[in-house]
Length: 112
Length: 125
Image (cartoon, rainbow over all chains, first blue to last red; front, side):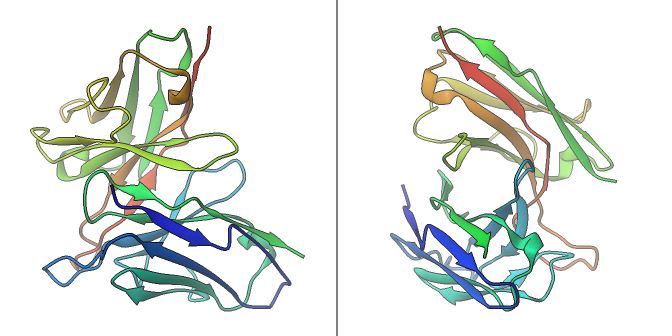
């Protein structure tokens, strides 16, 4: 199984400041089609997960442009350019390249 | 509005069985791969299973293979998860989710873009 390792596991951020979460994969997530199958999700307290980023870098519909995904191969980053109070939650990366699909451990984002 | 609604969760003894259902509205599941994901309270998300369009192909997490079966009834617009030989570690909130493949402009997209609210499974003696 592909192992995804996120860091840090928790993050406390001042509103208006940037935040960055890393996700490293045990193997490349680049498919021979040229697509990279890495998603980012956020789960806010009491809610179902929500898709933020798919194919490594593409924002899902309705996601603010404060959120961006970057990276390739085995190293990926989710960046929030200016954190807002509503961004509290647990952020997960997930690989969709091969089955079984797997999630990272999650990164808990709190507001200072 | 596109919605998924899970049901069928409950308390079951180790070794028992449960069947979860996921009813869709606002779209037809027949065009989509569908997934089940488990949330372990205080821990994280665990991918459980997926089923392809048409229902002839399915994949499972290593921990549930041979015990869980994902299926679909496109006529009823409903996804299922049959869970047998349940263990304590199967406990959690089970979400169904839709894997998208095309946006409103016809461009290729990906990701689990529609999720249900979850149904809770507790395996305990």
